[in-house]
Image 1 (tube, rainbow, N blue to C red):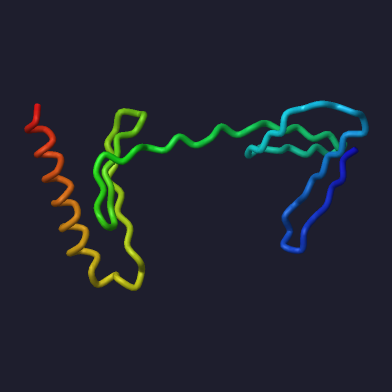
Image 2: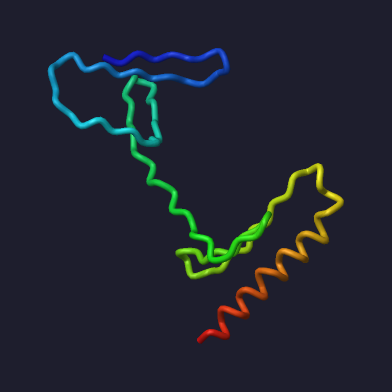
Length: 107
């Protein structure tokens, strides 16, 4: 049995209830649901996001190597610290660049 509803914020809800005795393993995942006009519902599990593992980290930045073969430098800073952004960006990028150079000299 399926119950369809809508929350106060406009988000849709679907509840499925089995009317037969079925033994299944519990499973929790993100799904893409497509609700058709005739009431049919098609659900497909969304694969988990593969995150890049950081090689080096600093206070507000990190350098990681992606599964696509690219290197990524990420930098984040609170909006209240906007005045410090240029100096911190240069400082932390320089620190990570020096760590990369030291790491390359090992080989």
